[in-house]
Image (tube, rainbow, N blue to C red):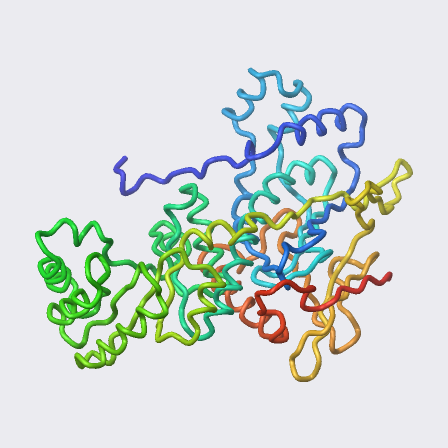
Length: 446
């Protein structure tokens, strides 16, 4: 079979989990509780310091991982050889398929402490096995998206471009690029993210390309010869003023952009803008990079900058690399076959029992004022009040992933949802200083 016609089987995601998920299943199978109907919930108790809201991201990746959460021969053999679970559990895992329901906030939606972001309804054994996979994806992706949203909020109409792949694990880099685009970034330097999710990709040359050549004019001429004026020349390898002059000499006054990657970016951008205008390159844009975060972007608001290249800060959550999301059992079938709420009472880690649903109160002008979380509600609860916008959507029904949430379409849909959701918040929500969540959360009982 040729390489072109070969179809690769996606790797199993079943061992992207913690051992105790499987040992709990073993004990539950032995005592007869594994099949009890349960409701699990994903939420976060608090936002990182200084954050007014979070952003849900990674939902599409969870749904993409669900069909490959299978224990095939290789996974079962590993578990058997290492005596991790017994034969009864291995038999159960060999036939494992998630057949339950998952409801949740739309990807791209903003969230607040206590928001019931994802609800998993299934048997105990089916649902508990997904805990680590769900949390590892949602915690990372949502951290990146939450940071990225602060950056695009600070940037206003100026595009942000993700270029942090070299600062993250190679697979995390793809997830980070996807999450950044969900939160409003215009593109990424990561080609695998572009291929997998239909993202716009960006990038031209690094300092290494300039240093390769005998002099800067030769490097610029080579790049211009290959790509024409529709390229970006990096002008700060040596002297910036000379670099700008040489860039225009090589590519002409129609050069698309120059990039600045060092120095006092605000001051340098003003000087470069004046120089470009004097040279007749009034349409040449200025791209800045160099360890930018949301605070640096905000500080450049008055500078003549056209776009921002962001790396380390976005892929690391800009100081908050996880959202602190947890996956808790909130309802289960008791020995009499009756569903009842359960909750933790642990100090600082208490949970609220019962199935929940959520809506956001939005006034006639489109401004959000309150998150309403209803305990005891059906997952598909539709609030009667006209100013309450339901937040839960069916994501998986009878084990089947619903269409529209995965792949490139899922990213586009999530980015649109984020833009609309963030627009409902007051300007206060985009402040970068410490403060309370943008809107309060009210808990009510059905």
